Image (cartoon, rainbow, N blue to C red; front, side, top):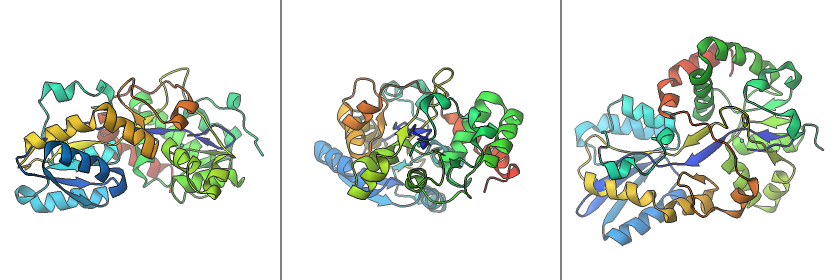
Length: 321
């Protein structure tokens, strides 16, 4: 997220909402998170509980398909995703099981179970980005990106389909270029003057701020902005986790979930990947602290998955490519 003329307008929180259990000897984890962003914690978990953790990483959709194909013979105990939408897809495909452990359910807040010519005062809400004053000023990823689909789903949840469709029809008219690239590419485009505003996940900007000299120089040219602070709050997303339907080690899986909810695990993600902890009071990285406090949307994130198909239809109808 950023606020300069180049503004990143939505964030991802590190929330791990799902289920796991104690397996006597081994725990099998399917993870869409990059190995560097999950294995250190899994190694610590394995050492603490004197168990072996087997990790398989890959794209979320590929892992979901693999789980589906493996069926009841799947060795996976846990599925970790990088988006609420994909966790919902796994749930809809009946690849996960419900969590009933009250001590687990109590861990996360209920709503969790992106030369200067734009000024902060010019920016306000996601809805306002459909205003014609932003024509040819906005950079964003393509409509097939799950993060963007979740953002649109949140708008549908708040405003309904018709209002969101009208917004999308106008919003795409303000693109400075054809949607392309990843979040870092949007930040670079703003820094290079190709557009004035970019909608991205904030942790990408944070990682650029502590990256190579070139990335740090690029990040220094933009600023972060938190949208919708005077109404519902900034859109948030999560990294999620769920216990697979045919898990053999549910007790150990639950222990992993509890472990990932500890202050230490949450602080690790904040420090390593600049993601916001979902637990209040957890020590945060200095970059996150310097961004300051913000009001987050309290929409229950299950709706991002439930409304995903509708969001895609809205984006397609608006010709958001």
